[in-house]
Length: 226
Image 1 (cartoon, helix red, strand yellow):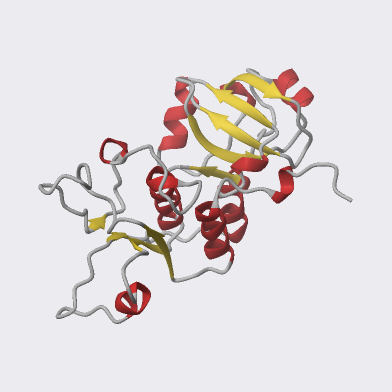
Image 2 (tube, one colour):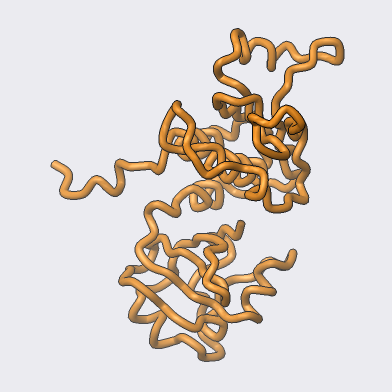
């Protein structure tokens, strides 16, 4: 018998579908809602339009999205958008479309220049990441603690360099975790920017925090930065 439901829960079906798509190395993921896609304003406003394509250099879309949830579940459009960007960054095409439209899946599969289907397509990144990183990318719900990092570490992680999280860049260790547990990565402004698999316990991380010449607390191979 289980003594905790943590391992059995996901935030919503969109999160679960993103995880399955990543694990199956799917070519595409279709997220259905009660609107035609991501709008550039209030969907009820006749002057707004669906954003047909969102490229790999993604800016924040929160200004366009309502925080309310759709009648279909717990997620809402903001969650769909967040999952869509994460999965697209893993190299999988994502389409947000209207699930109330008849034959929407068939129409998307049969789409051609003379048969346009209104939906939002997230262009997949060309990079390929490992299956381990794909799993870690969707493991935030299992996080046991947090690693807070300084300004310098935040900038390095945001670059194109393959870097690990070293003790010298850590300013705070929160929560109690063991080696191989999942931890959240928090930048110097308090924003969550990724997740990773801890290479040591929280006690060892605190002892090494701020010191040079120590082993990574999270190795690059087991680190996902959004």
